[in-house]
Image (tube, rainbow, N blue to C red; front, side, top):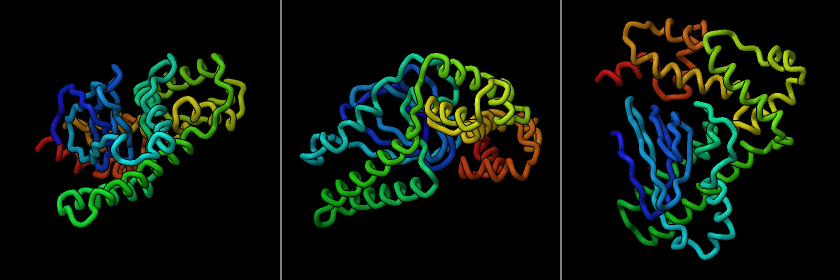
Length: 269
């Protein structure tokens, strides 16, 4: 896929990243996207993709009012939730909330990708009742997204300003100390809160547990470092706070779908 300049459309667009990484520009925010990220773009909203490294994605474009009479009751709220702006809490480079991105589990992402591929084949072959088949699969996909969103934001402790400020400070701490070993137990203890409470308010604010948030940010930062050929894979690994290059390679492949060396080779093709 190549970069796509700022554009808008009159249909709903569903996007699933399946391999690689790109930058999504939406709501005045530039957000790195990785495999498993899924989001819905409402009609008439401007957005763009900046592609500097290899990326694969599925796009599904549809008009909600045309696919089912019961759409509004079942999914209207989901679309409104996913497209509504968040509050004015601080924006972090790894914060998914402001673009309403949901990160699917590996199994859910594989299921959605399989169903998207079936929908693509139905569109190409246009056999008997192909429109109905596409609609049914789209409904199933949106149910999976809705369930993932409920799980991702299931914990909603009281979001007072003090809690929000604490998480903003924690995000800054993570971003400024990626090259260090970060122990969230110690961090919670230093702030006089329990680890369980810290995990709960962090997940509520960012949509991700602290460790997953940290790993995501490390991989996103590693993508930038891998563009520099003077850095070895071990150098890149250490620069993002992972001191076992083999573990870093496994984690990178898990997130991006390529090993670090494969990814670097693709960048320079």
